[in-house]
Image 1 (cartoon, rainbow, N blue to C red):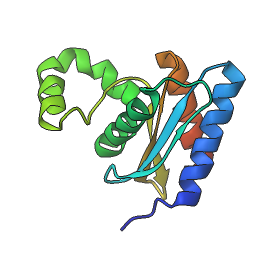
Image 2: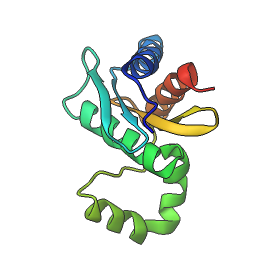
Image 3: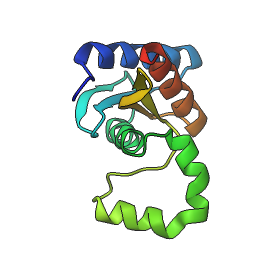
Image 4: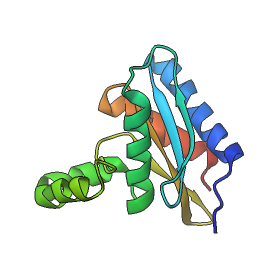
Length: 136
């Protein structure tokens, strides 16, 4: 059952972009549903050409693993072969890099938000802010 709506995606993205402006980062934001299907992608003013795609792939990763990409990235060093294989098998659709956060409703992951364009900690900060704005 798909519970991610465009309204939820817009609210999450708006919160993430507002945080990006507060910290002075040029950011792109993507929101996907629980299966990793794109709901919304926004390229912020001044954001790089790669930002929308890295944001989307971070969101896909967070949605499919049901965890933040920060947490996944912390375990990636110990599982290099898995992440290399997973990235190859999925055609580069997985990225365990800071900036992706699951969005939860009633304790279940209904999608995820990804942010790209800033430094890793900035991407993560903005994604967490966006997810928090719409999660329970």
